[in-house]
Image 1 (cartoon, one colour):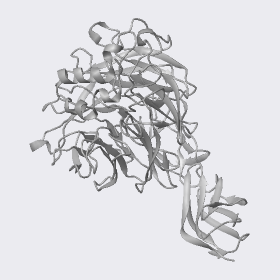
Image 2 (tube, helix red, strand yellow):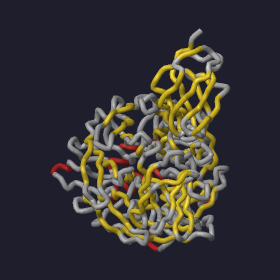
Image 3 (cartoon, one colour):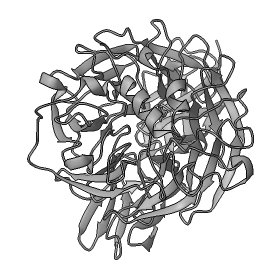
Image 4 (tube, helix red, strand yellow):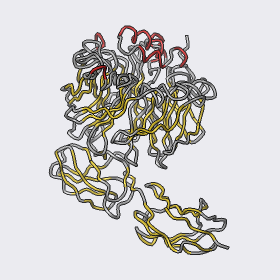
Amino acid sequence: MTCTPETISPSQARSAVKHDSEKRGLCQLLCGVLLFLATSALASPAQTFTSLASFNGTDGAYPYYVYLVQGTDGNLYGTASSGGANNEGTVFKTTTAGKLTTQYNFCSLTSCADGGEPAAGLVLASNGTFYGTTLSGGTNGQGAVYKITPAGKLSNLHSFNNTDGASPYVGLIQAANGSFYGTTSRGGTGNVGTIFEITPGGKLSSLHSFNGDGEFPDGRLVQGTIGNFYGTTYMGGANGVGTVFQITTGGKLTTLYSFTGGGDGAGPADALIQASNGKFYGTTSAGGANSGGTVFEMTPGKVRTIYSFCSLSSCADGGTPLAGLIQATDGNLYGTTSAGGANGGGTIFRITTAGTLTTLYSFCSQTGCTDGDSPYEGLLQATNGALYGTTYYGGTDNDGTIYSLSVGLGPFVQTVTTSGKVGAAVIILGNNLTGTTSVSFGRTAATFTVASDTEIKTTVPTGATTGTVAVTTPKGTLKSNVPFRVIPHITSFTPMNGPIGTPVTITGVSLTQTSKVTFGGVKATSFTVNSDTQVTATVPTGAVTGRIAITTPGGTAVSSGIFTVTQ
C-alpha cells in the first residue's frame, strides 16, 4: 500500500473532525499509520521530553493544526478542535509547567455564530490580541475569523459565505502592513480554496480563488523578505499532487513548483519557512524515495529533496509529516512526523539545512501513549529555549496532549512583529525582563518600557538598522531569534527629471544599508549612501521613466513620484 494525497481528500478528513472514531480511521488512511509501526528508533541523548498536560474532553480535545503561540504574559495559547462545554472546541492557555486553563468555549452563541471547530491555532498580533479561524460555524456555517483577548473575550470579525471562501483550515499571519492573511480550504470560484486578506477591524478582501492552479491550500502562508507571500496547496497543480505558490499583496499568484508524486514528494500539508540562508523549507506528507514524505528545500522554481522519510527499517525515522518546520536558535530545523518512529505514534526530529536528520523523540513511548500520539502540527520554540507542541491523540484520555522538549538551547527574546518602519511600536517577549537597562535595534538604542517580567514595549528608533534586537537584563544580554527588518521609506527626490548620467538626490528614512537603486526598474551602477536619510544615485544607461526604488536588507522602498528620463 502506498500513501498518496488521493488516499483521502481533505474534505473527507475535515468532515470527520467531530467524531473520534471516524477521525481515527480516516487519518490512519491519510497518514499510513499502519505502515509505520516501528521496532527501533534513533535517539539523541541531549534532550528532555516532558508531557505537560492531557486534554480530557471537558477542557478540549484533539488539538489539530495547532502551533502553540507565546503570549505577552509568558503563557502558551492554542485551540482544541473539539470538546469543551459545547463539544465545538476551545481556546486554551497553559503555563510552561503545564497548568491548563480554558479561555473560551466555541458555539456559545445561537447557531454557533461565534464559530466552531477551531482546527487552526492562533497568531499574536502587534496589538497584543490573538486572532484565529474556525473550520465551521459563523453566521453562514462556513467558518469564521475571530479575535480574542488573553483574558478570553472573543469577537467574530468575519463569517465566510463560500463565495469568499469556506472552512479555513489553518491559521493566520500578520504581515508587515498590519493586515492578516490566510487561506480557506474550500469555497471560491473553483470551490477548492481561496487566499484572503483581513484587516484588524474585520474588512475581508478575497485575493485569489484556486481553480486549476492548485487545490486545498491547507498550510499557513509565510511572508518572504521581499514582501510577497508563499504557500502550498495539498493537491492540484500540473500533476495533481500539490504546488508551491507565490502571491503578491495585490493578489497576483504564480505557481513556483508542481510536485510530481515521485522523489520530490506529494501532498504538502503545511507552511513553508524562510530560513536565515534565504531559502525556503517545507515538508510533503507523502511521496519521496520511500513514500513516507519528504523535507524539501526551495529556491524560486526549484525544489530539492533533502530527506525522504521511512529511510530506516520499520520507519524508525518517522513518516507522513503533516506539519511544517521551524528554525530554532541553533540554526537547525525542527519538526514532527504524524506516524512512524519506534512505536508508530510519530516523532520529533531535527534536520540540518544540508539534510542530516536526527530523531529526538518517538511518541507512544509510555504505556497507553500517555505521552501523546500523532503530532499533526509543528513546534514552537518559546523564549526559554525549549520546544513545545501538541499531539492529536494520546494522553490519559486519548484526547491529545501538550508537551515540551528541551534540547539544550538557551533563552532569547522575540519580537512579535519582525519588521517595521522607524517609529513603529514593537512588543518584545522574553523571560526575566524586570530590571532591563537597554534595548537596541542593531547598534541603535531605543526607548522602552518594561511592561512585565515577560514583556517590553518599545518603538523602532531613528537610525535603526536591520539586524538583531538586543535586550540587556541583570542576568545578561538576550538577543532576538530572528533579525528585525527595518523597512526603508523614500520621502522625495530631486531633480524630478533629467538625462542619463544625472545625479539624483534621494531623501528618505532608514537608507544606511542601501544595496540597490533602480530608475524605472533599471539598476543604477553608481550610488553613494550619504547618510541614513540621503542617497545620491546616477541615472543609469537604459533607464526609463518610472519610479525610483531603493533596496535594503529591510525591504524595498518605492517613490510615490515619477522620475522622467529626458533626452
